[in-house]
Image: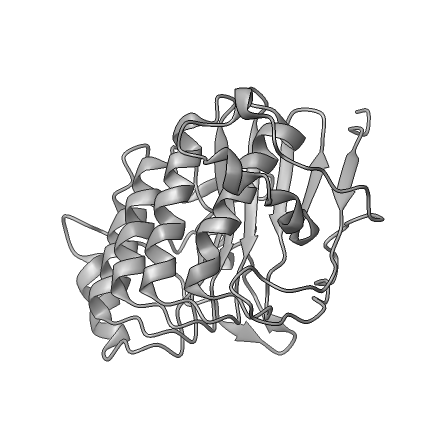
Length: 273
């Protein structure tokens, strides 16, 4: 078929977060496919602001635009953040969310479907910031008329614990579509938080896990290594039992690396799940 047309906004500069923490330039991940930088925008149109967005605060959202990119495809807009290793703290999360809300309105449009890839890894977020982030993401999903799907969530190497996981589990449950990747390694998560997330995925009300891909069904790619989960095998064994009946794959590694990815599972392909 015809190749979808794409228009991109991308700007990634170093600066100072509103909390006063210094930042450093963010390196792009291989294969992210972003294009050259475009002009920044000032988000001050009060008539189109959601009721929960303070226009005086949101007027500063253009500063945050430098950490976002928007790629418009034929049927959907892809919104990405790249705040990895940038000194982000709990005090910055509200400003980040306000800017994201403004971006969805002005760069995407209220009625256009959008997917969201968030990379806020390698920062200083605790449960205070993590819980607020999950609540705001759920709010955005409710008021964005075109439909907003969280596709990728990267929060590894922070200081997040079970409270954040409980709110993430609520987001997983209430989002109709599957989240494709959840990266939570190197945090402070215990059995309780991990169990809440696994139950939310296994018992999803729309049964959208595993998701359907062009290569067949594929489970959600979840990473939670290097946390405070004492008995991983015991947790997984318990989750396999009724009524949860979680199906999982450990993504075994072969000589050439992992046999699984966020879009392909060898266990599903071989009929083991």
